[in-house]
Image 1 (cartoon, rainbow, N blue to C red):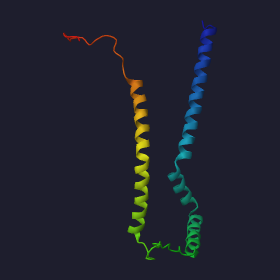
Image 2: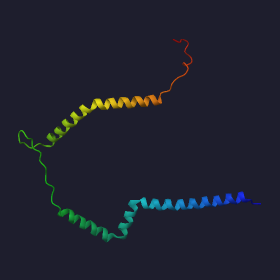
Image 3: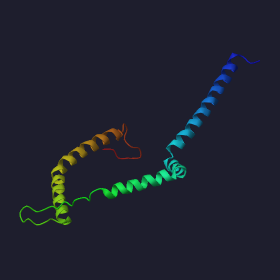
Image 4: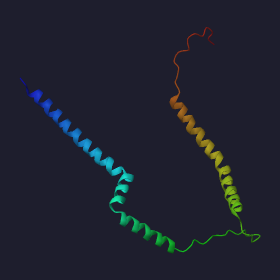
Length: 136
């Protein structure tokens, strides 16, 4: 004889089964939506002329863009053009100066934060360790 409790159990089980099926279907749809490479491959196979025409049009537009003008850095004192080494040397000296100025502050902040972290994770012993015959 099936009582009201058994009927409720069966209703809950049926509801869970339906929810699992919906979740499985939704997961499959999501997996397909996220799989961009296979969707792009499929789109290319279905619409090959449109893809090739778009690629040709993009190539034409990019070929008509003006060439990038080259920027030349000149040293103020001598008027000579700086090469890549000169630019790199200037950037390196500025970065080194900034690092040297910031190092004490960074060290202080790191020391404080590491101290706080170590305080959180240290264990306080309430009794002396066993096995030590001599105690001070």
